[in-house]
Image (spheres, rainbow, N blue to C red):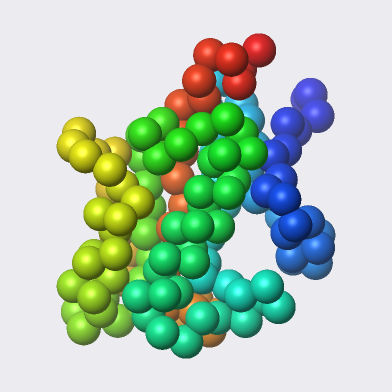
Length: 134
């Protein structure tokens, strides 16, 4: 097996080392991004739900940028949310700020009971631009 081609965003190495996972891996022309939450610098959840979602998207954006990608390169997204019946509309008001115009990536939304103190998490698969694959 070849060594994993890990992508780290600036300034968050300690978080990933502490929890023993990689933020993203390049493989076969794709970028596989671990779930991103709205964590502050100290790792705690942002208490305001919409700001927590924005912060999760900004954390995701930093990883995509570190790999030479943008949201336009995202082909598949999975979102996890605590209590989606009462929070989905509030969360989905933020998404257009980052997603861009149609056509949109595929999406799977999963309701969960626990996200380690967070209310929203997003993980994606992005197609690497040709220059980032070389």
